[in-house]
Image (cartoon, rainbow, N blue to C red; front, side, top):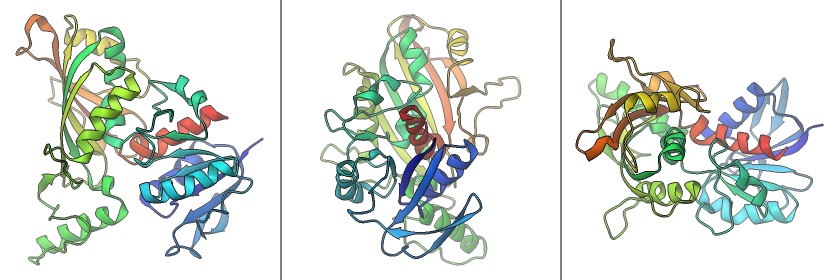
Length: 333
């Protein structure tokens, strides 16, 4: 028996990834609604041998829907997720709208699947950088509590949606042809460039992406004592985020111990080939489910061998967004 599902924001990059993963994993459904804004209503989508017409999302879109997968932005989630819950659906929301709301589970299935059953109609999907960063940190934290985590992100255009990916491609062609690059979607030229993440800054000088990583990690780990600081940067990569992560542990730990803890960890693939200087790259992670981990080494600036550096890469559209949500939905079945 399948479920009746709806995808809110189906025409976006994550919405399209929802469809790909549903098909790949043979997610059981009896019916599927394709929902988007009025701009996309009426478009057709071919999926599993059938043609579907995209419907404009309204308060009435969720009748007889069991699971609603949302990736339509925080404003639309705040507007329509309560209507979906009222109609009887369980919402798995990919936006920031409900992540830090008390009582709303914020879930990564490899870390805190037990929280799924605590939902009151809405389950929040964490930020993509948070997911990619802490999936490999969790097995280490569980074995030897992390006291402090310092993260620098290298975030692909995919994190800003399909339009940003297309703009990066367009800018690259324009620059190589000697033309002035088009800058419309992102605030600055991304091709052949990097810049500070394009989310708004607060009074402290931290941007929203950095604040999300701090607060979400503490909530998912159920550990308010862990010290987290982040610097989030947008880089000229189409798809898949990378992160440099420095960890300070409670007790001594060696790189070999870290490798042993990660080699069989769910959702993690080791790529740590020092002999050939071969470590995770965005092109390795693109289209893959796992978070790739390498450059595992001791941080000698932290006394008593309590410091470790790792480098990770993960597909922002898959594990960083759509895959994580569908894994949550699978556990709801």
